[in-house]
Length: 487
Image (cartoon, rainbow, N blue to C red; front, side, top):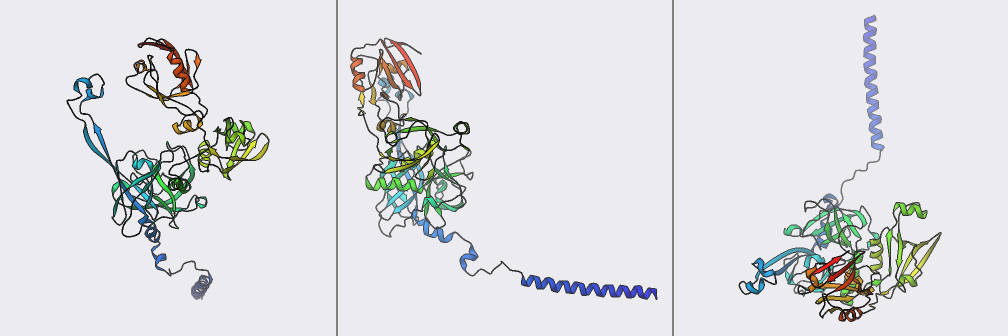
């Protein structure tokens, strides 16, 4: 009986377990049926493919390959580069010519044949060939080159099938994390497309360009991609690929593109005036670091601390003063001097820009009327002549306009040395360099080229002079044409 009970209990327990499992399974199935199912059968071909192909089909025909050719003449004998030995060997060997070729990419932005590329892609080229994605090739003429932004505008004369162009995106809508495609001609293998995201915006301290405010992307960008397109998912141009950060020469996932807003600025200048006339601001400053922010009572670093304002400049007339902190320009927050330069550079001569400025404890809005930098005094480029050690030196007057053109400090004034000829006596002293600025000659301050020439008319080879170089004052005493001392 006990066995039976046990057995009976075992049978009942097994039966109960089976009922429990069946019931639980039915309940689970019921819950599963009632739960929302996020999985869906794709209802279009595009959703099945999950492809960038539609964007590429629209954008790729507007991206071109650019081939350049430059003729380089070299001498075969090392003696021919020396003025003395060239007298004896000059006629013994003619210069040899070799052809240097390079490649890059470009973007068609106007149906009449206007192409945007990088300045460094075509710099020094004797011939420029633009090859379209359909294999048509055209010789290109340069409309405008701007080294400051590393942009260039070319023109081709299209024939046959109309050209495909890329529309510009609204750069203010670009955000970190947006999907982008880089289209170009990496390593000359032919047009290629890579994908990635916008890794960062407003990157500065990247290269040697004067106007640095790059879009950073992790889309693979390699040599040959320069001048190519960075395209958004709407098929519009986001930027022009210009450089990469790499120790090996290949892509490490850090590429930089010039924002389309700057591209549009250069393009309009090329098509309207044929030259870029940048507005003059007339002030310099330094980034507000953590230490400076703490001393100013800011809760965080940011902005540009104004340290110098040029008299009667737009900044001066607009009310900007040393010690002010520029927080934003036209609503765009500023973090460093490169950002300040970039947004001022996008302004138009004759237009206005709005500054958000911290003046001590007050926060104010200043309206700056932008104008062209004045060339006062005129540059007066002159080659010095006469019986003195400065013979055959080329000099010029500095002004806000010419200083900006040369990349010299805005507040430098006086006479700058542009070139020192091989035949100049002072070249043998190996003291002066192009870029030096005359401070004084024989104790007289130098302000203009005319004044310098008048002083040199009364000097011989024994002369004292001082020049400014990178913030240093170098004072020298020359005794004849072969002896000197400097401090």
